[in-house]
Length: 379
Image (cartoon, rainbow, N blue to C red; front, top):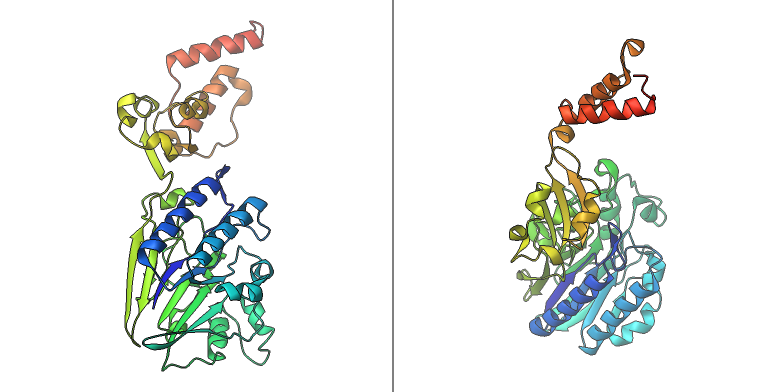
């Protein structure tokens, strides 16, 4: 039985004030095309369907359209809620949608029943566990000692009626210890939400959501599919993909990936303002259509740099400087001998501490004239 494994769609997300809805619509259309090519038996969406617990009308409409298209293909679709979702909203209408082979995770109540499918190799049980915290699990297992996320997951799994002789898939949304993170996940400080990978040993495949970079966790049987789109510049060098997991007879699993090509890529460009705005630099590239993080190396700030750069790079999201000043951010202490120094001397000292280099003769002359005008020629 073949499954397409997705997660972390984050429909409705904004990145650096840019709405990603157009990009998400484009990539979901591409995923439908991949589904037509791969012809899977089911599609798994392992949480964080939306970016907010109360998604916008546009986000809900886009996901609804996606589910309708999957339903037309007579697929089994499994959707769980993630930490960004409202479990109640994801669960709404779930029992009705089962008639269309769309399975939405119910709110966790301590009792999970699998969806059981059959193929030529026998039964395959799909267990759907939405994002839960230890406090959610303690509510239903008051006699158990649950201090950590690993404890919580172990108690949940130990109380499932898993038949180890049959094939079993777990769909969940958690942070497995050692997973390679990016800057766009919502992870607890200090790693307190870590789950040890060993708790999933009983499953033939664990389809994970939460971490945005596609990766296996110690084995291909425990895998993050990653986001279908890049949601931070820490992912600029990543390759996004769809995971395809195929389980045949018990103990046999094949995992492959199909690359995804976004409407607009995320790229980081570094150099001087003159270099990055030269036509020869961006000619023949996709930079003018991409989401861009520009890092200027000019020693002096470029006036109105963002507006000027946007004329060349319409989708610039972020601007930073990397120069002598930013690499050596000095602590500016209280000025000494205040009364003994002229105003332009104070400004010159401040400039040098702020920029880690002295003012040029031209800059000194400008400040001297400004000070003279302010003090009406008294200096």
